[in-house]
Amino acid sequence: MKRIETIIPNNKLNLVVSAIEDIGVGGITITDSKGRGKGVRPSLRSLRGTSKQQAEYNSLASVMTIVEDDKVDRIIDAIVGVASTGSSGDGMIFVSRIDYTVDIQTKQKKS
View 1 (cartoon, one colour):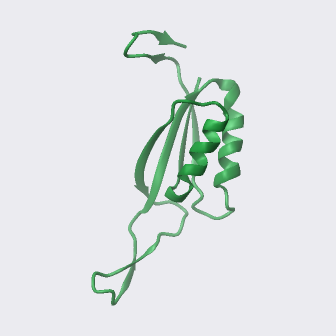
View 2: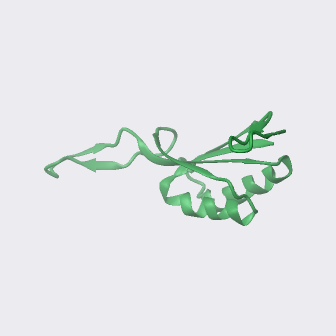
């Protein structure tokens, strides 16, 4: 099993979730987050609207799912297909190995 975590701009969230669900993945965790990377941070107006300053962080979404190894490449291709604009700040995908999971309700371990 693999954990796929994707950090993307908020405006790509629905597209990414739909792309993952279309592959047949049911369990998805979404977290609102803030961060800085290569992407351009938005300009903000002051309270009076007389000056602008750069936002300290971008508003991002983290999408995480655990899948069987044979689905990883299809999910990555689907995410890149809907989220990539070719610009810096499109996001990142992280893939890591999961040794096992434990269902809290049933207490069953799954490798």
